[in-house]
Image 1 (cartoon, rainbow over the protein chains, first blue to last red):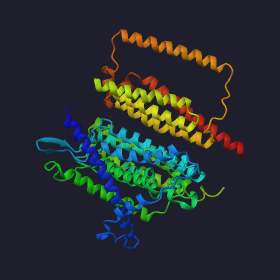
Image 2: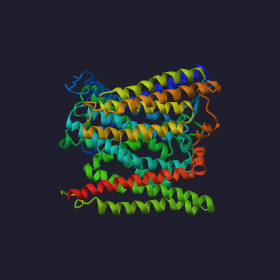
Image 3: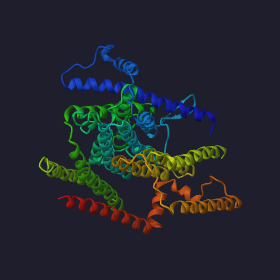
Image 4: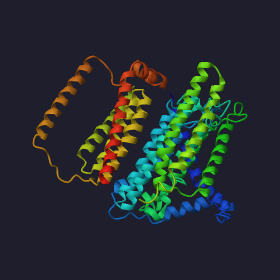
Length: 371
Length: 174
């Protein structure tokens, strides 16, 4: 282990953070422009050509905004909470492979920060740590609305973490590894979304709930609990929560592209390794567009229905999907018959249909009406 | 080896001081946070020993899931500050006695191990096999199948019990 190894490591980590930070800035612009188009508006287009300097203007505004700390907050935790929210969203990206490797002046540079053996478990553990920022932000504000909002958002994150973990298990079983590089390489012939579309859908829904995006964006439901856990935050501290949400969006789209959409794979990537990040970037942009599209289309789901959807529909469905995937692979292996393998998508789509029927039955207005 | 020792010393400092902070903090939320820090340092110890799977599980299960529920309970009950230490009369002598026993045991073990020339960080073969998930699963489902199943039944019983308790409360309200 020579010193150049350390230098390379530091540079790669730094570049990854830079990518995520600029990505956050321009994702806000992307979202605002795309939402505006969907609502037949123009969107921010004054600062710079096509509004390209808008993120910089926003950043300057947030930096110079008055930072107000309410009187009776628990100060240490109040300052710690936004940091605890941002850091997990940054370090999550460390295990995602952006490509294979390339030669730089005769030195093989790999296109990932860390090739961890238990990469998926690493993502799970960091995601579970991310809940603390929200709980602590709600509690330390010393404000009952903020606290209820914090507890509400974190209960939502914990509930959907189960479905998220099980959809990770689908990718682990299909890729036969917990290493994200191996999972990507296993998708050379076919993306996992073809084999297990329902697993990808569950992952998608669970991650939307995990990053508090529409239609699960409880903090945005101002008429219920003002602004949820970040009611008392202003200035740069509020911007950190905002930043964490958008960085998590990017990272989660990267994870989704890696697990279900072939990651950095694409035509010609074997020959030109530098195409890998380009393909991943394109996939991430498309997935981010889908997230924005969902926000523009779907109404917010009410909190009690959100919880019963997570526990009564999504969790059993994801258990069924894991079971179907594992059984299909086992039977195809034992009987050497690809028919069993293709029963995976068929059976899981049938179970998803059953889940939709249960949504009609269980989430009706009548069973969730006023008592 | 040397850098491992430095990492170990720094980490053990953090670990011990967070444990002390957990015990002596007057605020239950701060205590819980110190405990989370302690769990994370323990996870890094596992990483040093070459067992990343256990380290990540430690963070996911203890620091991520269980401590968040602890925090929920503390916050919802509103018992953040410990007001008056209502100590039971026999508690303090017993605590001193147990602490002395623990100290003697650990000192004895440290010296006994030091005599047998074992180093601090030398992962043996069984730990290395933990590094791959396959080896871990193999030992879990072959050698330790019965304890594994008993644990899962225990958890199931606990879950059913929790549901029964929650249900009874609802019936009582009506």
